[in-house]
Image (cartoon, rainbow, N blue to C red):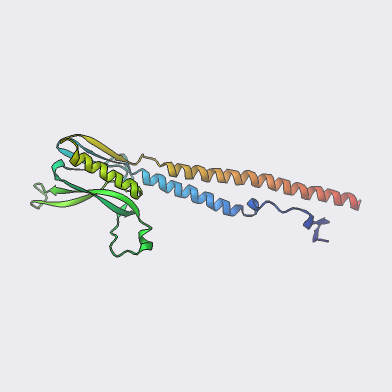
Length: 220
């Protein structure tokens, strides 16, 4: 005979499904998806645009100012002062030097690309001549292949196309597909575990009630 509580042999009652027993784990996964999706959305709110006309190149980056994300931070330089494109590794949207890093540390870094140009000092800057500066064109992890494709495209536009051809490259969408998918998946997980949990709990409680009624009839 199994353990009896109020006349019920509990070993005759099936335990709730595994998904209900470990519902807390499913809830944690769902919360992780929602939170990480929100982080992805914030990452891609950093929209940037790089464009050049015959004389001037302009880089505009939106989302850096959290109080006014629609106000861009703009950098301009003469097109003739463009030098090269670069493949860079990033972490949290910042270029990270790779010298001296171990392989395990390198795997944590994302791939992006930048350009270098010569900035010419103007009156009032307190300096003469110019200096080489770098512009990170995307703060998001683009992957090794995509970053190299973007580098090649800009280099071709700047050097191999007919002189003075205007062009525009943009990064980010203002929203992120991956972030949206993660958030929706997390919400679906929560809804699913809620429905399954309610159904299984009702079924479980119904079995207990039926057995209680059965033993009550026997006692009578």
